[in-house]
Image (cartoon, rainbow over the protein chains, first blue to last red):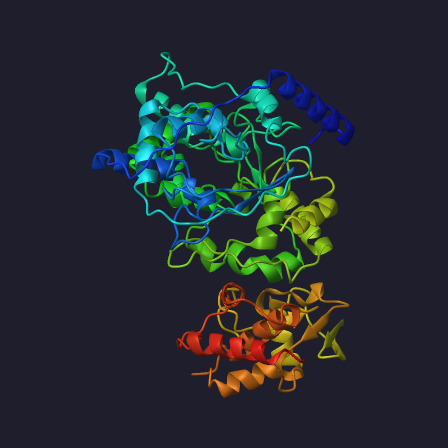
Length: 409
Length: 150
């Protein structure tokens, strides 16, 4: 956040006042009783949309209890817990009618009329079509009903008062479905819809302002997710080798591309979900994203050479020029988006946390170096990677950045 | 010359700065408990404890270890984890066991009564090719139950 604490606080106060004055009141929507019946094809489409929207990434912590137990999402303001979205009438959404569900998606308001926190990406979901919202509803209402209460959110006053969000919504929520752009073809429009509405890519890849809203003028200009770096998905993409429709489509479904590397951190869950949806949907997303990214050109692959004992001893076994992994097609670190990014966040995260095992899957793995290397050694290693594998200027404040990332575990 | 503190003893070793700690332990100091498995940080057979935390000694260059406390299985002296591994007969071929014992020791020193999920998560980076994971987990639970004394 670039804004000072004082300015942030006065902004919050302003929003409080606006929210109070506006006193936008949402009525409770009467409960529905008993399980409804939905056409199987609608439920199937809902399942695909749930994967495209990564619902399970936040709403499932225990794979044996899907959509029942939500995770605590760390935000700069505190921890917000994803709630139970199974059809359990008491602790889930079993009493929600379709209009109540649509209102939650469009306006961020629950059945009883309480505001939901925008950790639920309703500023994106509001762009979903009625038909897709209905399909998601059909899918969720046909899951097993499981009793599970979400833990209370950990937010400071006044943010723990939900009416504050009424002001936030007035400032930042523009409700209503997404409108296609007639200047582009059907594929592009389909992709734009999936990226901007259901897929809510901007949730991580768009920078946020002091009040946690996505910065309107900087859509997909690069942001942050759980203290991981989320690179720009438009003209500012720092990827040394420009993305193409083909490489993006393959990466989004496999979590790996030979000219860019492996998905890491929160992105691994996204690519794991996209692996299960129709290829045509992912390809459409790739068409839309590639249209905003720099045009492909031969990448100047730099490797300035150099000699660092820590790199040689800790990294060279896999990332060295003659290493087995390199010979098997893993890209040079010179092609890494994280190494070429404006912030060292991604490099530090990967050194400290590695790419953990993904049980039962053939997926990239890297061990964590959090215990082997001190903060100063991680900072030196990051500086070495930058100077050896990138032509971009050196990163500032590396030791402070390492301490920040380590503290955010 | 490089100075390393291993199991409380100071050693001067003549090694290149990028030499993995594992090679120095085995080849220069004669401490053969830690094993070479994959050399890529994928199996955990080389696990030792540095400043109270488990590290893959195959991927830890000696030059990062100045002033840090290194512990190997030779320095444990038959602790509760070792006794529990014996009691559960957790070893098949035994190649992974020194690494398993070191990782479990580090876990129980920080978290003497871990939940099952915490044990599984913590131990998951150490592999056993023989498939005695169930006995290894039982040994860790058993050691946790006895309370950890190092």
